[in-house]
Image (cartoon, rainbow, N blue to C red; front, top):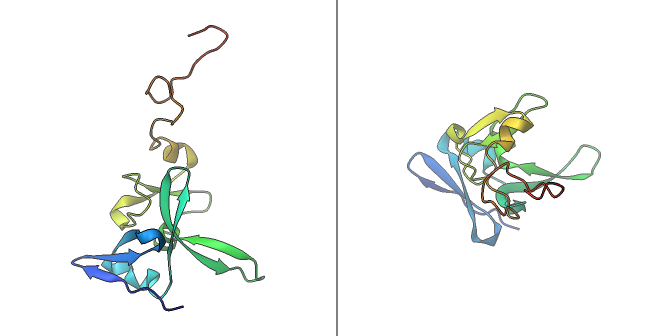
Length: 126
């Protein structure tokens, strides 16, 4: 399979993904992402750019584009400041622990109040 061609627009590179989607990276990070066929991958409600790789023992694994670009410290996650998992510009990526990353979460789909962190207490009926 031929590798899909990356498009350069000014200071960003637009990486084509499957499903007609695209990821954006800084032009300086183009060498890290070109030469691979990246695909769109949905995790919960967020889309990410991933590629299939193999570990040294031959087992398959997914490599996330944002982790390829931003090397986080061990035990830390890579958080997208704007919540867009396809915006992989360095200014949009930051190292975070799970609690920090969770603060970026939107209101849950099953929320009846429409407010983050507000839950129904069944016993007290409020």
